[in-house]
Length: 138
Image 1 (cartoon, rainbow, N blue to C red):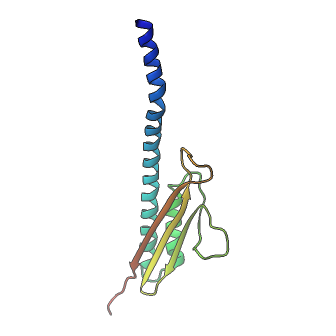
Image 2 (image 1 turned 180 degrees about the horizontal axis):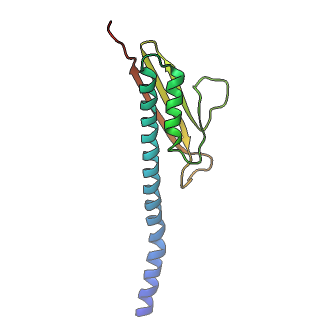
Image 3 (image 1 turned 90 degrees about the vertical axis):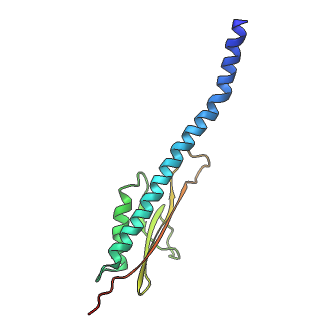
């Protein structure tokens, strides 16, 4: 009876380990994606805050957001690009637009997955922040 129990334990292990491995890798992937999504949101907020200061512009907002975001991205190139441009988008992009009394900063694109389940696709990255510009009473 002893050899039969060893064989069944081996079969149970062979059936269970892929599921456990998938759960562990999925948890790590989710944590990395959440971290990068939070970094994109923080970068958009930093850019929007820098752009709403008196005398600043959308160019300043995009530069600050890009600098803030690039520290958290590993293996991905980020650039200033806005949807609707004729050029192809970079993997991760930052777009700042002046709305008159407000400034809008968007971050978007895809970051590579640690465990690529589908070839050629990554994890979506999206953040949107709009802040009113500073006004001072005279």
